[in-house]
Image: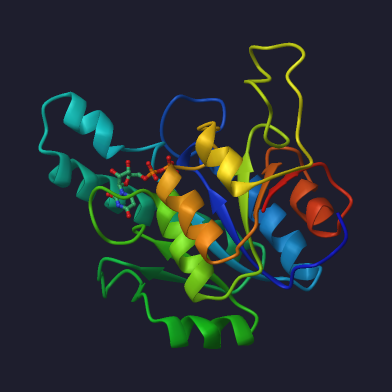
Length: 236
Ligand code: UDP
């Protein structure tokens, strides 16, 4: 994959901050993610970040236990703000200037989402972390990532996972599952390949934003994939 991106949006699920535990934020893991981001920035890329909240709270899980879905989803969105602050902290500890912008206003904690302001931050070399998804229940941070990628005119949405791309079947379960180098949006949707939720995939398709699925747990891999040297699947 040759270098073809200047500005990217990196989507990390909450689980990417979890480390070996089953819940919450593991500082060492957050620091590792921060150094991935720093390496990409040092290589000259502009970065927007969207972090999920599944390591703390998922609306669907709350609803399954009898909570009102919208109420539970708001809790999930607040969880994404905590994760964003954790990542901001880790990035600033290694000298990367950042701003957090939340889709739910929280003036004492971070900025609200203001696209033009986010543009200024990027122009000044800051990493912008978008929190609280799209700011509405019944959505996910994947959809939030696709939305921010579109409005910030990112060249690609990088979806950091624990596998190195999109496979014909779950590579952790099926031994001879085949990895795709590229795959079409429509096939991903038709075969329900579960890279991101369908709304997010459709938003990327409709706005011509390729999704790069790669392994973010392998040290140095984000910069490698960005340089066109790593293993990944491009959904386009
Ligand atoms: N959420 C929401 N609207 C959004 C984004 C997130 O309601 O625009 C809630 C939803 O409950 C979700 C939770 O926040 O389960 C955490 O986000 P997500 O599940 O996308 O996190 P990830 O799976 O990426 O860790």
